[in-house]
Image 1: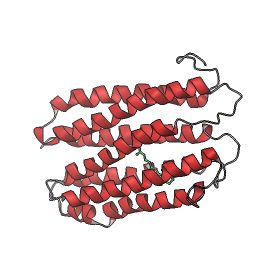
Image 2 (image 1 turned 180 degrees about the vertical axis):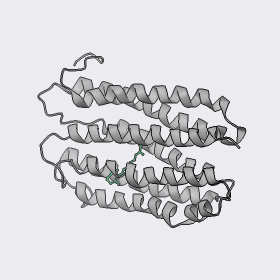
Image 3 (image 1 turned 30 degrees about the vertical axis):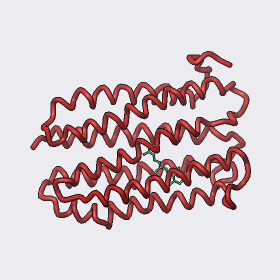
Image 4 (image 1 turned 90 degrees about the vertical axis):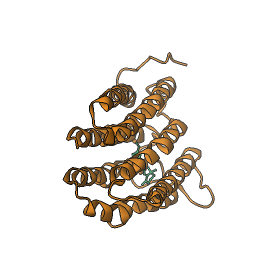
Length: 248
Ligand SMILES: *C/C=C(C)/C=C/C=C(C)/C=C/C1=C(C)CCCC1(C)C
Protein backbone atom coordinates (compact mmCIF):
# COMPACT_ATOMS: atom_id res chain seq x y z
CA UNK A 1 0.00 0.00 0.00
CA UNK A 2 1.45 3.34 -1.06
CA UNK A 3 0.96 6.54 0.86
CA UNK A 4 -2.07 8.48 -0.23
CA UNK A 5 0.04 11.32 -1.51
CA UNK A 6 2.38 9.11 -3.57
CA UNK A 7 1.81 10.18 -7.12
CA UNK A 8 4.08 8.03 -9.28
CA UNK A 9 6.25 9.51 -11.98
CA UNK A 10 4.49 9.21 -15.32
CA UNK A 11 1.10 8.41 -13.80
CA UNK A 12 -1.04 10.47 -16.14
CA UNK A 13 -4.30 9.17 -14.72
CA UNK A 14 -3.24 10.03 -11.17
CA UNK A 15 -2.22 13.46 -12.43
CA UNK A 16 -5.75 14.12 -13.68
CA UNK A 17 -7.23 12.89 -10.38
CA UNK A 18 -5.09 15.41 -8.48
CA UNK A 19 -5.95 18.26 -10.84
CA UNK A 20 -9.61 17.28 -10.73
CA UNK A 21 -9.69 17.42 -6.92
CA UNK A 22 -8.18 20.89 -6.80
CA UNK A 23 -10.16 22.30 -9.70
CA UNK A 24 -13.48 21.10 -8.26
CA UNK A 25 -12.57 22.48 -4.84
CA UNK A 26 -11.56 25.85 -6.22
CA UNK A 27 -14.68 26.08 -8.39
CA UNK A 28 -16.84 25.39 -5.32
CA UNK A 29 -15.25 28.20 -3.32
CA UNK A 30 -15.77 30.48 -6.31
CA UNK A 31 -19.46 29.64 -6.79
CA UNK A 32 -20.26 29.83 -3.08
CA UNK A 33 -18.60 33.22 -2.68
CA UNK A 34 -20.01 34.66 -5.90
CA UNK A 35 -23.47 33.65 -4.75
CA UNK A 36 -23.61 36.76 -2.60
CA UNK A 37 -22.75 38.97 -5.60
CA UNK A 38 -25.74 38.05 -7.80
CA UNK A 39 -29.41 38.96 -7.71
CA UNK A 40 -31.73 36.92 -5.47
CA UNK A 41 -33.31 35.28 -8.48
CA UNK A 42 -30.16 33.28 -9.29
CA UNK A 43 -28.83 32.57 -5.81
CA UNK A 44 -30.32 29.09 -5.67
CA UNK A 45 -28.89 28.19 -9.09
CA UNK A 46 -25.45 29.31 -7.99
CA UNK A 47 -25.75 27.34 -4.77
CA UNK A 48 -26.55 24.22 -6.80
CA UNK A 49 -23.54 24.91 -9.06
CA UNK A 50 -21.33 25.02 -5.96
CA UNK A 51 -22.87 21.82 -4.58
CA UNK A 52 -22.19 20.01 -7.86
CA UNK A 53 -18.49 20.86 -7.81
CA UNK A 54 -18.24 20.35 -4.01
CA UNK A 55 -19.72 16.85 -4.21
CA UNK A 56 -17.30 16.13 -7.05
CA UNK A 57 -14.34 17.52 -5.06
CA UNK A 58 -15.10 15.15 -2.17
CA UNK A 59 -15.38 12.15 -4.49
CA UNK A 60 -12.24 13.13 -6.37
CA UNK A 61 -10.49 13.14 -3.03
CA UNK A 62 -11.54 9.50 -2.49
CA UNK A 63 -10.91 8.46 -6.11
CA UNK A 64 -7.48 10.08 -6.15
CA UNK A 65 -6.51 8.17 -3.03
CA UNK A 66 -7.95 4.93 -4.40
CA UNK A 67 -5.99 5.41 -7.59
CA UNK A 68 -2.60 6.19 -6.08
CA UNK A 69 -2.88 3.27 -3.67
CA UNK A 70 -3.74 0.78 -6.44
CA UNK A 71 -1.58 1.96 -9.30
CA UNK A 72 1.96 0.56 -9.24
CA UNK A 73 3.10 1.65 -12.68
CA UNK A 74 3.16 -1.87 -14.08
CA UNK A 75 0.04 -3.60 -12.84
CA UNK A 76 -2.08 -2.33 -15.71
CA UNK A 77 -4.50 -0.92 -13.18
CA UNK A 78 -7.07 -3.63 -13.02
CA UNK A 79 -9.30 -1.74 -10.65
CA UNK A 80 -11.20 1.49 -11.11
CA UNK A 81 -12.83 3.65 -8.40
CA UNK A 82 -16.18 2.71 -9.95
CA UNK A 83 -18.29 3.02 -6.81
CA UNK A 84 -17.06 6.50 -5.88
CA UNK A 85 -17.46 7.59 -9.50
CA UNK A 86 -21.08 6.52 -9.68
CA UNK A 87 -22.00 7.77 -6.21
CA UNK A 88 -20.69 11.17 -7.36
CA UNK A 89 -22.64 11.03 -10.63
CA UNK A 90 -25.85 9.80 -8.96
CA UNK A 91 -25.81 12.99 -6.91
CA UNK A 92 -24.38 15.51 -9.35
CA UNK A 93 -26.23 14.58 -12.56
CA UNK A 94 -29.70 14.99 -10.95
CA UNK A 95 -28.45 18.35 -9.62
CA UNK A 96 -27.50 19.31 -13.17
CA UNK A 97 -31.05 18.38 -14.23
CA UNK A 98 -32.25 20.65 -11.42
CA UNK A 99 -30.29 23.51 -12.99
CA UNK A 100 -32.48 23.21 -16.10
CA UNK A 101 -35.57 23.31 -13.91
CA UNK A 102 -34.38 26.37 -11.97
CA UNK A 103 -33.38 28.12 -15.18
CA UNK A 104 -36.80 27.59 -16.75
CA UNK A 105 -38.89 28.02 -13.63
CA UNK A 106 -39.88 31.59 -14.43
CA UNK A 107 -40.86 30.41 -17.91
CA UNK A 108 -43.23 27.87 -16.32
CA UNK A 109 -41.20 24.65 -15.90
CA UNK A 110 -43.23 21.90 -14.24
CA UNK A 111 -41.99 19.60 -11.50
CA UNK A 112 -42.88 16.71 -13.83
CA UNK A 113 -40.27 17.90 -16.28
CA UNK A 114 -37.68 17.77 -13.50
CA UNK A 115 -38.72 14.24 -12.50
CA UNK A 116 -38.54 13.08 -16.12
CA UNK A 117 -35.01 14.42 -16.46
CA UNK A 118 -33.96 12.80 -13.18
CA UNK A 119 -35.61 9.51 -14.17
CA UNK A 120 -33.67 9.41 -17.45
CA UNK A 121 -30.47 10.30 -15.60
CA UNK A 122 -30.94 7.45 -13.12
CA UNK A 123 -31.60 4.95 -15.94
CA UNK A 124 -28.42 6.19 -17.67
CA UNK A 125 -26.28 5.89 -14.55
CA UNK A 126 -27.61 2.64 -13.09
CA UNK A 127 -27.20 0.85 -16.43
CA UNK A 128 -23.72 2.38 -16.85
CA UNK A 129 -22.70 1.21 -13.39
CA UNK A 130 -23.88 -2.35 -14.00
CA UNK A 131 -22.05 -2.34 -17.34
CA UNK A 132 -18.80 -1.26 -15.70
CA UNK A 133 -19.10 -3.93 -13.03
CA UNK A 134 -19.73 -6.48 -15.76
CA UNK A 135 -16.48 -5.43 -17.46
CA UNK A 136 -14.63 -5.65 -14.12
CA UNK A 137 -15.81 -9.18 -13.35
CA UNK A 138 -15.46 -10.18 -17.00
CA UNK A 139 -18.90 -11.69 -17.52
CA UNK A 140 -22.42 -10.60 -18.46
CA UNK A 141 -24.90 -9.46 -15.83
CA UNK A 142 -28.54 -10.51 -16.39
CA UNK A 143 -27.67 -11.58 -19.89
CA UNK A 144 -26.08 -8.30 -20.97
CA UNK A 145 -22.40 -7.66 -21.54
CA UNK A 146 -20.75 -4.32 -20.91
CA UNK A 147 -21.76 -3.19 -24.41
CA UNK A 148 -25.43 -4.09 -23.90
CA UNK A 149 -25.64 -2.13 -20.66
CA UNK A 150 -24.02 0.79 -22.47
CA UNK A 151 -26.85 0.71 -25.02
CA UNK A 152 -29.48 0.73 -22.25
CA UNK A 153 -27.65 3.61 -20.58
CA UNK A 154 -27.65 5.55 -23.85
CA UNK A 155 -31.47 5.36 -23.92
CA UNK A 156 -31.46 7.37 -20.68
CA UNK A 157 -29.10 9.96 -22.13
CA UNK A 158 -31.24 10.15 -25.29
CA UNK A 159 -34.27 10.86 -23.09
CA UNK A 160 -32.55 13.89 -21.58
CA UNK A 161 -31.41 15.09 -25.00
CA UNK A 162 -34.96 14.67 -26.34
CA UNK A 163 -36.41 16.68 -23.46
CA UNK A 164 -34.10 19.67 -23.97
CA UNK A 165 -33.99 19.67 -27.79
CA UNK A 166 -37.60 18.73 -28.60
CA UNK A 167 -39.61 18.37 -25.39
CA UNK A 168 -41.15 20.61 -22.76
CA UNK A 169 -37.83 22.18 -21.76
CA UNK A 170 -37.18 23.34 -25.31
CA UNK A 171 -40.69 24.76 -25.69
CA UNK A 172 -40.39 26.69 -22.44
CA UNK A 173 -37.01 28.10 -23.38
CA UNK A 174 -38.34 29.18 -26.78
CA UNK A 175 -41.19 30.97 -25.04
CA UNK A 176 -39.00 32.74 -22.51
CA UNK A 177 -38.93 36.51 -22.92
CA UNK A 178 -35.47 36.68 -21.33
CA UNK A 179 -32.73 36.53 -23.97
CA UNK A 180 -30.11 35.71 -21.32
CA UNK A 181 -32.11 32.68 -20.20
CA UNK A 182 -32.44 31.47 -23.80
CA UNK A 183 -28.72 31.90 -24.32
CA UNK A 184 -27.79 30.04 -21.11
CA UNK A 185 -30.23 27.26 -21.99
CA UNK A 186 -28.60 26.82 -25.38
CA UNK A 187 -25.16 26.62 -23.83
CA UNK A 188 -26.24 24.16 -21.14
CA UNK A 189 -27.91 21.84 -23.60
CA UNK A 190 -24.75 22.03 -25.74
CA UNK A 191 -22.90 20.61 -22.73
CA UNK A 192 -25.40 17.77 -22.47
CA UNK A 193 -25.15 16.91 -26.17
CA UNK A 194 -21.43 17.39 -26.78
CA UNK A 195 -19.75 17.50 -23.36
CA UNK A 196 -21.63 14.46 -22.10
CA UNK A 197 -20.72 12.50 -25.24
CA UNK A 198 -17.21 12.32 -23.76
CA UNK A 199 -18.40 9.73 -21.21
CA UNK A 200 -19.61 6.98 -23.55
CA UNK A 201 -16.28 7.34 -25.38
CA UNK A 202 -14.46 6.58 -22.10
CA UNK A 203 -16.83 3.69 -21.42
CA UNK A 204 -16.11 2.20 -24.84
CA UNK A 205 -12.45 1.76 -23.86
CA UNK A 206 -13.49 -0.95 -21.38
CA UNK A 207 -12.43 -4.51 -22.27
CA UNK A 208 -14.90 -6.16 -24.58
CA UNK A 209 -16.21 -2.82 -25.82
CA UNK A 210 -15.59 -1.24 -29.21
CA UNK A 211 -12.63 1.04 -28.38
CA UNK A 212 -10.72 -1.24 -26.03
CA UNK A 213 -7.21 -1.34 -27.36
CA UNK A 214 -5.49 -2.76 -24.31
CA UNK A 215 -6.01 -4.88 -21.25
CA UNK A 216 -5.79 -1.84 -19.02
CA UNK A 217 -9.21 -1.80 -17.54
CA UNK A 218 -9.22 1.50 -15.79
CA UNK A 219 -6.56 3.80 -17.15
CA UNK A 220 -7.92 5.22 -20.40
CA UNK A 221 -11.47 5.39 -19.18
CA UNK A 222 -10.57 7.32 -16.04
CA UNK A 223 -8.58 9.95 -17.93
CA UNK A 224 -11.52 10.49 -20.25
CA UNK A 225 -14.02 10.65 -17.37
CA UNK A 226 -11.82 13.10 -15.46
CA UNK A 227 -11.57 15.43 -18.44
CA UNK A 228 -15.31 15.13 -19.03
CA UNK A 229 -16.13 15.99 -15.42
CA UNK A 230 -13.91 19.07 -15.37
CA UNK A 231 -15.43 20.43 -18.59
CA UNK A 232 -19.01 19.61 -17.72
CA UNK A 233 -19.27 20.39 -14.02
CA UNK A 234 -17.19 23.56 -13.97
CA UNK A 235 -18.45 24.65 -17.40
CA UNK A 236 -22.09 24.21 -16.39
CA UNK A 237 -21.50 26.30 -13.28
CA UNK A 238 -19.73 29.04 -15.23
CA UNK A 239 -22.63 29.36 -17.68
CA UNK A 240 -24.98 29.87 -14.74
CA UNK A 241 -22.60 32.27 -13.04
CA UNK A 242 -22.36 34.27 -16.25
CA UNK A 243 -26.13 34.40 -16.57
CA UNK A 244 -26.48 35.49 -12.96
CA UNK A 245 -23.85 38.21 -13.42
CA UNK A 246 -25.78 39.69 -16.30
CA UNK A 247 -28.26 40.54 -13.60
CA UNK A 248 -31.97 41.19 -13.79
C1 LIG B 1 -20.72 15.32 -13.62
C2 LIG B 1 -20.96 14.10 -14.24
C3 LIG B 1 -21.60 13.93 -15.43
C4 LIG B 1 -22.14 15.07 -16.22
C5 LIG B 1 -21.71 12.59 -15.91
C6 LIG B 1 -22.32 12.22 -17.03
C7 LIG B 1 -22.30 10.88 -17.43
C8 LIG B 1 -22.79 10.39 -18.62
C9 LIG B 1 -23.45 11.26 -19.61
C10 LIG B 1 -22.63 8.97 -18.86
C11 LIG B 1 -23.12 8.32 -19.92
C12 LIG B 1 -22.96 6.91 -20.27
C13 LIG B 1 -23.53 6.51 -21.48
C14 LIG B 1 -24.38 7.43 -22.31
C15 LIG B 1 -23.36 5.13 -22.03
C16 LIG B 1 -22.24 4.37 -21.38
C17 LIG B 1 -22.30 4.47 -19.90
C18 LIG B 1 -22.18 5.92 -19.40
C19 LIG B 1 -22.73 5.88 -17.98
C20 LIG B 1 -20.69 6.29 -19.36
